[in-house]
Image (cartoon, rainbow, N blue to C red):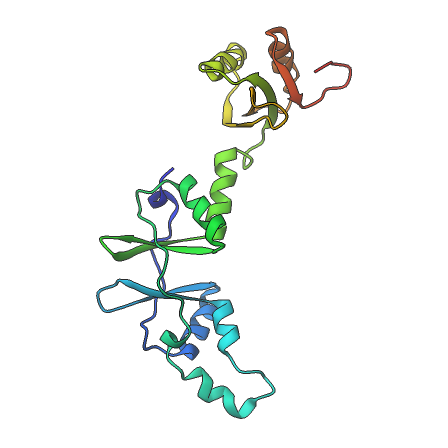
Length: 215
């Protein structure tokens, strides 16, 4: 999945000379948490978050300084430089940027110009779609030997039952690197017959653990 498939194209921005007060109003009016700061060429030169605004705002007990502080320019508190991504980057790779840099938003640029934005919420919703948990389904976890061609072998079992596969994920089997776990979501609420087929083909089903049926 590409960034351009999930990014929001309508992005609310400010210029570096706009005030902190202007940023505060936009955050409240549009219920957003981040505002990219752009120059007159629509290039991203900074970014501010709701936390930046809160930290820059004076205490409510300092009423006489509130008005003055909020008139400061946004460039005085914005974060720069800004990590950006391209519309043709893969979403899966962008997730690592969120994790490694501990950020919750990345502007999307093409030819150095702002074309969209991706937030933490967008990434979580995409993860839900990729894993198939947004539709009624059953999850089956199969322990398999880590060798080429094992995935099509396993999916053949599902094909015989003509069950619709919502998603397939593969992750390491930590106790033994010679194995992997294949996680398959199928669009049925009763996976028992498919589990029996997998076991009859010699596969070890780790989940679900059905009563009375050995793994």
